Image (cartoon, each protein chain N blue to C red):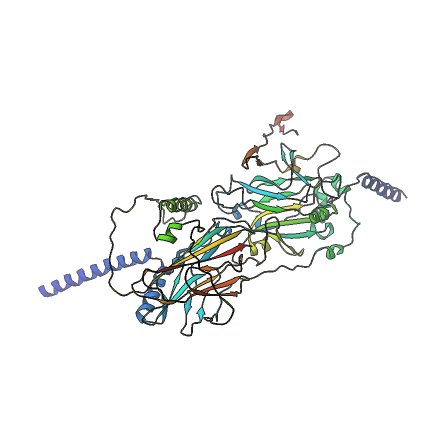
Amino acid sequence: MMKVFYTITAFLFVTVLYAQNPVAPFSGYPVSPPVSSLTSSPANYRGSSVQYYYQPVKICGPQGTKIALSVNEQFVQRQNTPYAFGLLVGNDYRLRITDIPFQPGREIFPTVKIVARTYPPQGLELEFPIQIDITQEDIELALDGKFVTRVIYLENPQTAMPIRGDSGTQISTDISRGLDPVAVAATMGQPMAIVQIGGRIPNTLGVTDPAFFLGSPSWIAFDKTPSNRYEMTRYQSTPRQSVPVANGKSIIPLR
Amino acid sequence: MRFQIMRFQIISIILFFSFVSTVFSQTNRLTVDPALAEQGAKIVAEQHAGQGYSHSSPNPNIVLNTGVPWQKEYLVDGGDGIAQTSIEEDWTVRNLETEDTVAHFDTLDGRTLVEPSNRVFLYAPRFGAIRKIEGVLNNTQITALSQTDAQYLLNTDRGKEQLGYTVQETKSGYARTRTQLSGIGGLKKSTGAGVTQGLSAYSNFESAMYYSNLLRQQFIGLSELVFLTEGKIYAKAWQGTEGIKVQMNILAPMEATSEEGAESFFQIEDESKTSKLRLIKTASKKSAQPGEIVEFTLRFDNVGTQPIGNVTILDNLTTRLEFLSGTALSSLKSGFVVQPNDSGSFTLRFEITDPLNPGEFGVVQFQCRVR
C-alpha cells in the first residue's frame, strides 16, 4: 500500500515540475553529444601556428536575429547577424541567439569550435572569414528538442561541386545519423568549424553553472567604421581567484 | 717480387679511387630529386629519340609541394598537371587534366610540341556545411543521464517520443560527391565540331592588371617588381613559420637566405635552329568572392629561331570557374571552340590560323565567373 502511495506521489511531483517549466527543450542532453573523435586531440589541428590566432568567423542567422558571446561567464554586446568575430582556434565558445523570427521570447545557445585556420593574403583576413550559416530550420529543430550539428569545411577546389555558390549562401548537405559529420566533411575538404545547436540551456532557477560558458575564452569583435575599415575590440575574461576556506582547502567562487 | 709489390700498390690506388668515386656518386645521388631526375631523363630520351611529340621544357609543376595548408584556399589554373599532356599523330590530345593550360604547335621538321603555361593562383575559398540532425531518444547519451544534475534529469521529456520517431525527420542523404578527374581523352583537333566561332580583334592590353609590361613589351617593369617582391615575401612567410621542415641526424637544420642580385649578365646567341613557344597566363585579380568575374589573359611568343604553325591553346578550366560566353578575344586571327569538360566546366580551344614567325606574339583573353 505504501509503495503505491510513494509511486503516485513521485509521479505527481515530476508532473508538477514538468508543467512549471514552459520551455524545456534539449533537456534530454545534459552535455553535448560527442561530434567526432577526429577533433578530440589538439594534434589533429593543423600546424602549431594556429594556437594564438584569432580566426575571423562570420556568423549568419535569420534576418533580425541577434548574437552574443560571453565574457566572465556573462553574455555581452548583442550584435545583429551577420557579424564577424575573431575566435581562437581550438577553443569552444558558447553563443546566445535571440530575437528569432516567429519564436518571440525564445533563445538558443549553440556552441562553436574552430578547428583550423585560413591563410589569406595579407590584408584580406576580414574579407574572407569562415562563414557559418545558422538557418531558421536549424533553430526551430533545436527548439523542438532536436540536436543539430553543423561541420563547416573548406571545399577542396579540385573536387568541388560545379554549382554556383553566390556570396551569402552556403552549400549544405544533410547526412544520416549513423555517419560522423567531421569524417564526411574531411572527404569534401578541410573541416574548419563545428557548430552544435541544441542541448544545454542555462539554469533559470538560480546560479548558472560556470561550465555552461565553456570558460569564456577571449574573442575579438570586428566593427565596421563609416570609413569602411574595421575596428577591433578584444574581450578577455579575468581569471577567478581562489578563496581559502577551512582545513587548508580553497574554492573558486562563482562570479 | 718487386713487380708484385708495384702491382699491389696500383691495385690499392685503383680501389681507393673507386671507393672515393662511389662515395661521391652516392652523395650526389642523395642531393638530386628522384622525380626531377626521372622527369629530365624522360624528356631527354624523348627528344633524342626524335619522337613526334615531347615537352619542350621540363614540367615546372613537378616540384610543387602538395599538402601545404593554404592549398585548398586557392583556385589554380594553368600549367600541366602530373600527367603530361601529349598530342598524338592524329591530333588526339592525351592527359589534359582539369586546371591545365597548354599550347601545342608544329615545327618545320614535323614535330608537335607541347608547352605548358605558368600557373595562376586565385584566392577564393568556398565553405560548405555538413548537417546532422539527431533526436533525443536516438542517442546513447540517454544512458548517461545518471551522471548529471537532478534538475536536468527532472526536466526531461522522455516518453514523449517513441523510438525511431525521428527517422522521418532526418532527410535522406543525398550527398553529391565527385572524384578528381584524371583528365579527358579523345579530344581531337576540331574543325567543325562544337561551337566554332571567329573572334573579334583585340588589341587593348590595359585591362590585364598584373604584369602588363610583361604582356606588352616582354620585360618586367618596376611596377611588376612590387608584385614579385610581394610574392617572394609570402613565399618566405609560408615556408618559414610552420616549423622544422628537414632534420638529419642530430644536427639542427640551418637556414641560409640571400638577397643578392646577379652582378653580371651574359647573353649567348645560339645560331642553331630551334622551335620554342612561351605561354604566359595572368589573372585580373588576386582574390575573388563567389560570383565575382575574373579576366584571364594568355600571351604566347615564338621565342625560337624558326617559324611555328598550327598554334593551339587549350585551357581546361577548373570546376569553380564558369566561362562567360561571348567574352573570348584574340589579337590574331583564330578559331575558338568551347566544349564542356568532365569536371562540370569548359575546355577552351584557341586555334591560331596563321603561322607565327620568330619574335611574333599573340594575346587571347576571356572572362570567368567564380562559382
